[in-house]
Image (cartoon, rainbow, N blue to C red):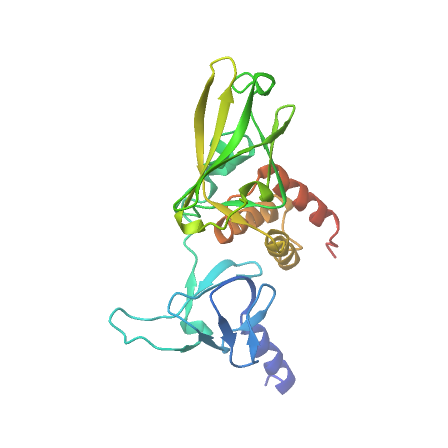
Length: 270
């Protein structure tokens, strides 16, 4: 006969534990009373309250990967002010196909590095300072300049000159700001290059910016690293990049690598 305490131990460890990495919308854990945020912990039997059918919670399970939690609302269901579901009934395995194309992003230059896979996330993720490598033979910054063109419906067009250092383009989060108030949903952001030799401008990439003003990328990476301490470093890095890309947007590979190396160096593998 199995001792009672052992049965409790085995039952407890069979219940999946989830760590939240991203919340879209307003979702509450009715069981604990907590409003979900990055870092929140969940279990299979927790009851979640969704504010709309479009709410999404992204979670990681150590050793099993990323899952998506969303209301299991069927087409034609009458609109509800709140939707309650037990977590395990609202859980959906994340569709991972098409992720990262073999991590070619590591070697991509401007403008390819700003191209996104819409099946993963159409946005580009921007921190306060973001760095991108470009080919100096193609874009001679000594005889030209990169610029960000902001076309806002009803507010006009703004052009911001961007900074370069050697073969590195630097884009600041502040470069996306304008003097007047604009509607991001009605605004187009384009990266361009002006050549003095040709006396002409070239449009290089369409940018859909997601400005990370609260260190969401670093928070996501910390959570994933903490949940995968015993995994291979390369695998942890791939998981971090995949989740940052999918949850927030495609980051600068230089910035991502700098943050990852700093975080991974500070953890204990014991």
